[in-house]
Structures are given as structure tokens and as C-alpha cells.
Image (cartoon, rainbow, N blue to C red; front, side):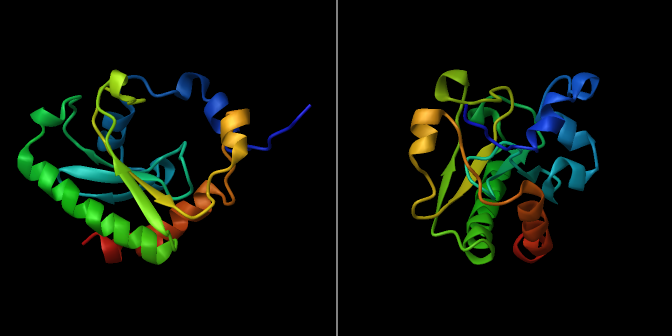
Amino acid sequence: MERLYAPWRTEYISQGDKKIKGCVFCHIVINSDDKELGVLHRDEDFFIVMNKYPYTPGHFMIIPNHHTPNLEDLDPQVFAKISNYAQKGVKMLKEVLNAKGVNIGMNLGSAGGAGIAEHIHLHLVPRWSGDTNFITTIGDTRIFSTDFDKIYTKLKQHSDHYFR
């Protein structure tokens, strides 16, 4: 039997009554415990938050405060600000985490692959040569070389510099 050590999943599995009801992103908008929530930056129109279940270490999202499943319903000025911060985020991932590339994208609607389809969000996923391997394909498992909290702390220490 193969064993995968993933201690960070304990919190998710044992949440019980603490599991967030409703939109998880709207929950972040109205709650201010940024460290607990993994928030890197807040703006009057959006926030930047680490993905709790990342594709690669350092994966974060830029999310409008306005709850909408439709990109076309988002204020164009807010989308322009989010795009501007995506550029800043790419620079931070390259300089702070030494990412060799970055995937940026939005999965719109459940048919488009969105895991949380009711509230649009923009993913920034840092990439390195060789950061994927066979275990993802045959084992349906991802392996991370570092701890979520360490990456959050490192990015948070630099976020004020990049997101001003």
C-alpha cells in the first residue's frame, strides 16, 4: 500500500461545523483574518489570496469583491485593476519564488472547469521546468516540495512591495 503524507489536509477533513457556508470568496471579503485565510493583499475592489489546494506552490488568485459568476458583468475598471495586479503578481512570482514561467487563467462556469463557478477569480500559477511528473497522471496525486505556510509567509513578506 502506498502512503502519501499530507498533514495540511487534516484541517480540511476535520472542519465539520466550521466548513464555510455559501460562497467561500464572499466569506473572505467580509472576514479580516488575513493570515488564517491566506490573503496576500486587499484592495477596495478585489483581494489576492493563496489557493489552499494549489496546482503548484505559490499558486494564488485575484478575486473581485463583487460576487458574480459572469466576467461580462464585472465592472471593466475593476477588471482592468485586476489585470494590472496580475502583472505585478507575475513579477513577484518570478522574483520571489524564482518561477521560470506563470500560467494565468480564469475558468468561467462549471462547464469551463471552474471549481467555484459562482464567483469569478483569476489564477496565477508559478511554473518551473520539471514541476510535473508521472504521479499526477497515474496516481491522480500532486506532490509539493514545500509547505503552504512557508510559501504564504514568504510571499506575504514581499506583497506590500509588489502590490502598491
